[in-house]
Amino acid sequence: MFNTSLNLHDQAYKIILEKILTADYEPGQKISEKEISDELGIGRTPVREAILRLRQEGLVNVIPQSGTYVTKIDLRVATSARFIRESIETNVIKEVALKNDITTAQLHIVIDNQKYFSKQKQFEKFFAEDEDFHREFYVLSGHSQVWEWLQTINTQLNRFRILRLKVAKLPWETLIQEHEDLLSAVETHNVDVATTLISNHLHLMLDEEKTLIQAFPDYFSNY
Image (tube, rainbow, N blue to C red; front, side, top):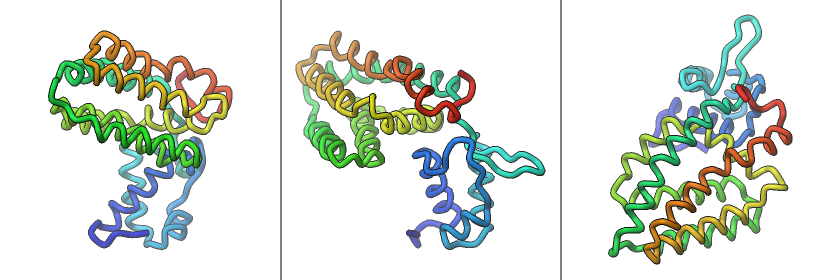
């Protein structure tokens, strides 16, 4: 489980963060240093340091004389992050669609991977490919650093997006089809269609919000 090239604190942080993002540690769930330490097979000090870092990032909350809890998904923060993402990514897609020398082979590979993981119902790997699809446009436009900056504000949005994959009435095929349509518009340099498609794609959160709240009524705050 552990990588000797990383210190225990960083590894504990990454593992706990992943469990929160995927709702393995559910929003509102009480967690403890001892239980996580036992689960991961490491000492409590790196776990304590990881939890402190996650607390600073708003992903866990310590209630005196009660315990440490995973925070609920803050829909106000997630919605704001979505707005920023759409504002930036629309311009990123526009830049890529205007280029004549782009190579889109990696984007086709990502879509093929998504189709495979969709059939396998491996939501974590599907989500990782979804992220890779969007990241590739930032790479192609020369804005990789912008993508990295966005990750610092995307946590609540990503928690929402990952949870969306667990709702049966919100099929993964919808996301794949929208990716295919977007890629086609970019490859044919149809800027207007491409920018409209990415805007609609990133608008899905607002369209699907009520469905997620109905499916997981105890997972959200500020809605």
